[in-house]
Length: 366
Image (tube, rainbow, N blue to C red; front, side, top):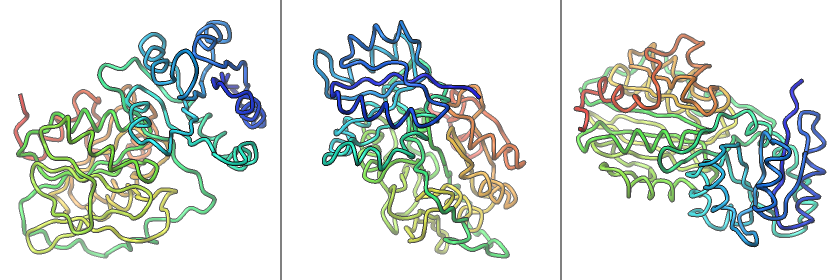
């Protein structure tokens, strides 16, 4: 059994002690060192060669964001940010994700040791998943999504959107693109949307993120893309030149058709495949409402959310595309979809936008 070496970087002695105690409970994790600021961390990295680092943001001498940027440019290592700013400041969190952090975990404000112990199981899984991730030096602004939240009960998509025996007849030629992703997906989503021309088909995106982050993520994408990007609201029309990002942590997002028009609907329901919103729910709605006019895209991420839904899209006549292993941070979701025979095209991250446009009937922007 492979053991992953962990380096803990935090200016609080209590946090260093608590994280060491928590992570050491798992036989696959070995805390090989701690550091109270980035300068000591730099020396420790050379000494202990960690597989993964936990990193605070607010530290003396050099803040965690600056250290993260230097680290990812010099020697990319999986990083989990553990900070009180993770919940308070979405902009700081998204900046850390852009720079290459695998995920950001909120540092509890009261009864610190007991609170961290309470979320210990989840923290252990996050750190182990991060240690397995493939990270590279950023080629542009780097974005990476948080690790999935683990819960005990796993619902299927049927709990939210039952199977309809026959797909509704499609009477419109409008294309709709549905994208699902998780760990590592934010940077690929940026790549894809930034290459979309203003006449591209309407796009709906489910990206696994903590609740409250999708609005800020959409705003940042909107500032850097030619098309409009915004967080989806119930009833929003799916229109050319518009990408709608499913709000995270509150509702599932589905595509509905009314006459010749498509719109999104936010529906209540339990977590499906441990997620809300679920990619499987979105993809099933695409199979039922859009059929052969749909393009389904599954990107880097842990687990198998989206694999079954993509098979339903494939069987309904949609074009289905998966990110290839070499360009994935985590080759989980695409691998599962490919294994089910659900994928028409396996494409590198750098070619993803052009392939989508090729099958969506839009011109590639030069």
